[in-house]
Image (cartoon, rainbow, N blue to C red):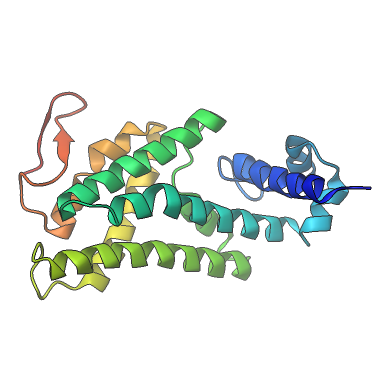
Length: 220
């Protein structure tokens, strides 16, 4: 008889397999048989825990946003220091997150949420709505960071934190697309200083932008 631990381990293995395969490739390119083989479980196990591949991916995305909040958003944006220091910690946190996924899979995935929304938005309303919710959670973290900076006098009192957070999210997605194109996590560090201009961090107080790919200098 299957134990509770075995059931938990099988479910976790399926979620990890979905992340390993779908995040680095695509939803359509990865079938349930391959997911089960990668997880080391029988195909029937997938349908014991999840009603479909889409249901499995929805659960995987829930885990992924939790990990992204825990590993990147909370320690960087809710940490101590100035706005410039928190933004720098955020960029380095994303760099470490993407580099870690690249080491694990051999591929730099870019933004898993962005990848899936581009692929599935026209035919999967469930995935589209779930990804919209997850991106909104990220935007709320950005908004809180900007609102805190306004309260502390680091940004002008008339700063629109909602609009700024939306632009921040859009820039982050673009940077991750470029990192995916180049398959180089250091692209995030090279392009990350653009956040200084977007947010309004004074020159000399923010991230250091590499000159080409070598010596660093402050972003003007």
